[in-house]
Structure formats: C-alpha cells, structure tokens
Image 1 (tube, rainbow, N blue to C red):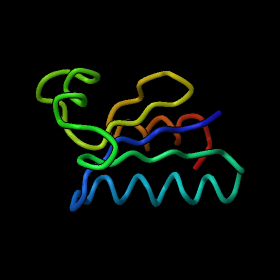
Image 2 (image 1 turned 30 degrees about the horizontal axis):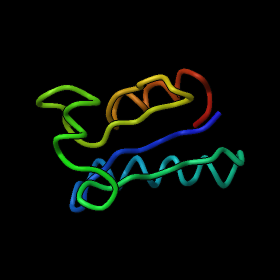
Image 3 (image 1 turned 135 degrees about the vertical axis):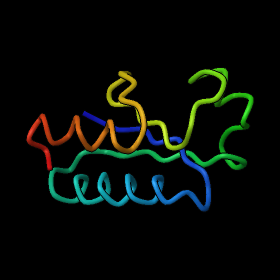
Length: 82
C-alpha cells in the first residue's frame, strides 16, 4: 500500500491530509509521496489527470483515485486505518 498526494501551497486541506497520511506512514510504515503544484506538475497536467475544475488535494492509493481530503479520510476510517 502507498499513497500519492497532489497538493498546492497554502491549501489547508492539503496540509491536513499530508498530516493524516504522515502519521499513518509513521505508525504503519506506509509510503507517502507528495507532489506540489508549480514544482512537480502544472495546473494543466493536474486538470488533464483529474479533470477540469478538480480541487486540491487529490489522493491516489495504489493506483486507485480516492478523491480529496474528506473522501480519503472517510476511506481510511472505513478501512480501520485511522
């Protein structure tokens, strides 16, 4: 299991999910890769991947798109990972 986070600076939801996944990584040894808008990808690349109008953050787990912060926290709770 591994997580990839697509985020941007100044986004409170991005900060929250990075904290949640960082804690999960420490407790369970699950790898988390974080990419940031403007450094690792462009807005056009982001929209091409997730769809026009998609919001930040977007989280992928093992190639499966989980969605944003709330969807990911809900998924982690349902899987008893939190």
